[in-house]
Image 1 (cartoon, rainbow, N blue to C red):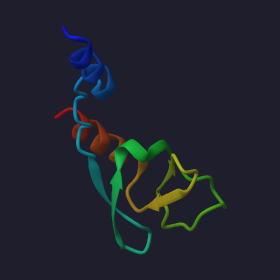
Image 2: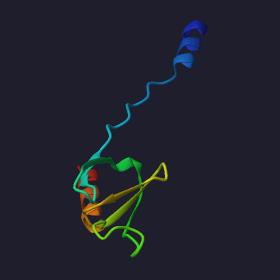
Image 3: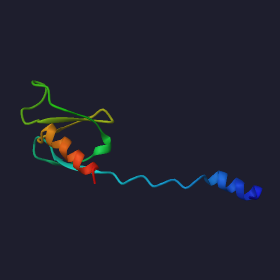
Image 4: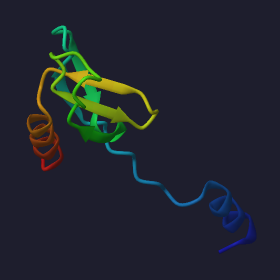
Length: 88
């Protein structure tokens, strides 16, 4: 390979595979508002601690940016949605 071509290849680097498209689950806030959540941004799925959340909160999602999303759906249901979405 000529030096010029080798330099160009080194500068461009090897072709990188495209990132997979984000995968979302469709959930509902305690007030019924629809929420699309990117599952790659979920840090943990937790049952709400009694006395810390409204009685209509059935699950708390801790996001990678440290924010919380509370849902009407229970955590087991959300974990099943995530599992189903990632098994495709």
